Amino acid sequence: EVQLVESGGGLVQPGGSLRLSCSASGFTFSSYAMHWVRQAPGKGLEYVSTVSSNGGSTYYADSVKGRFTISRDNSKNTLYLQMSSLRAEDTAVYYCVKGGVVVIACPIYWGQGTLVTVSS
Amino acid sequence: QSALTQPASVSGSPGQSITISCTGTSSDVGNYNLVSWYQQHPGKAPKLMIYEVSKRPSGVSNRFSASKSGNTASLTISGLQAEDEADYYCCSYAGTSTFRVFGTGTKVTVL
Image 1 (tube, rainbow over the protein chains, first blue to last red):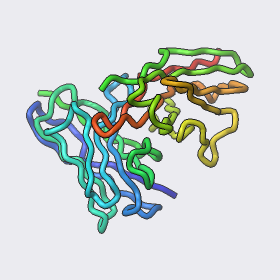
Image 2 (image 1 turned 120 degrees about the vertical axis):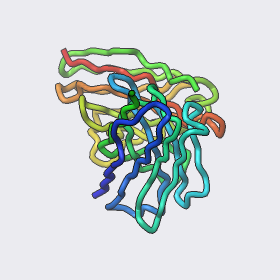
Image 3 (image 1 turned 60 degrees about the vertical axis):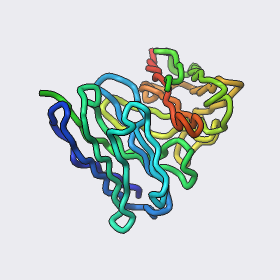
Image 4 (image 1 turned 45 degrees about the vertical axis):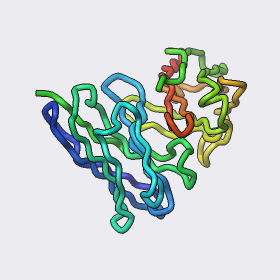
């Protein structure tokens, strides 16, 4: 059974930094692209970032480009999202999502999410 | 990176069929057969219902079907049931620049 467990969310001040982690199990982590998708309170889904299976290719939404960095450690079956220069509009539940073998396909299996609140 | 356009809400009575549209452009929905649909119940994570325009993952009811015509993808729920009441989102690959875009979301209400 696929399991994705996010951690690292919490309250951070504007301009601050936070690193999210996602521990994966139940599948061959190194074979699949992975994604981060967020959802602001009461709002819709917003694409954040994607990393290819070997970590060699990364993609970002314009809204986070230059501030967020996605990475993965296939030896630890863990996905990361390093967030810096955080803004109030980054407040959201951040979902770790398993992708397919093909990196351009839409996300497949979603974790339960971790809440990030940016506020002073 | 504009979101794909979906109706804010759609409703139907039990047993009826409803259709949710997802309108994009020739740079996303219209150019790639990489449209997915998700169901999200309140307080829960989204669940994949359809991938690659019209394919159903294992375990998803065959009451859910989908298609695409031009720049618009559509999700149809047949034999509407109370448990289908949820938010639904579409997603599409959008090329190497934008990469991915989600729909604005549709709230389905079972009357």
